[in-house]
Image (cartoon, rainbow, N blue to C red; front, side, top):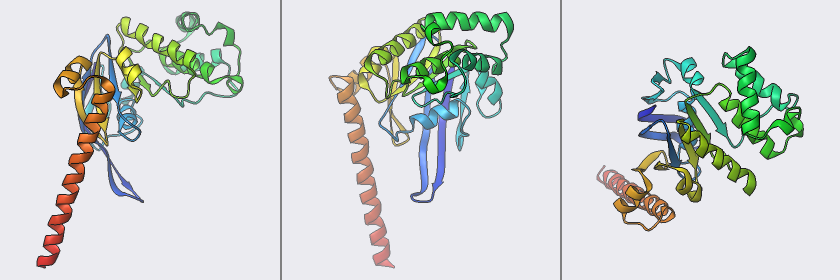
Length: 266
């Protein structure tokens, strides 16, 4: 359903110079599965997800969504994917119903088919009380419900949740996680990006732990705990990141010594 192979994204940053946001990242996600991308801020999670949703172009590597190439078939990828983040904007002057209707039409739905999809979503997500609420009058929880509804209105087989619970209160976040689990049970392929270990433990069938553009380890949570001899996911997370930073620091120190020797010889 999702196939990522050696995905790399490089930038030229005015402050940092050459910067690698993703470094040869590979993973697969299947139907009826929640695949977790775990990592701290700056790990590269959002960059990977923006490439999958065709917002960014990779520097190299490949990614396919439901068999479609994100580079050569972006319009088909967008028809087969729904994207929810923690900062998805809503239109202040449109009601909840109007926004979901608008996105349904963008995805080629119309008439009774679109109305039926919307009625079902508004019932399932308990949104009927905000049908006529303007975006400018919505709470954070209401906005997130609208974001989910418009991502689901065209019934895509692949869904991406990028730090979707960040900033939500406990009740709204819990309801969102329940919705994600229901979608998995319906056979959707779900990518769930988070830095909250409790969410990953509760939801994810497989996880990839990312740091500084690299996938440090990937597998089911029991497999990873056994492989790295750690008692829980949080300890595993910190262990892998600490080990990566330690090795990186040693490599930088060795590189500095080599350069010093070259300079002294010259």
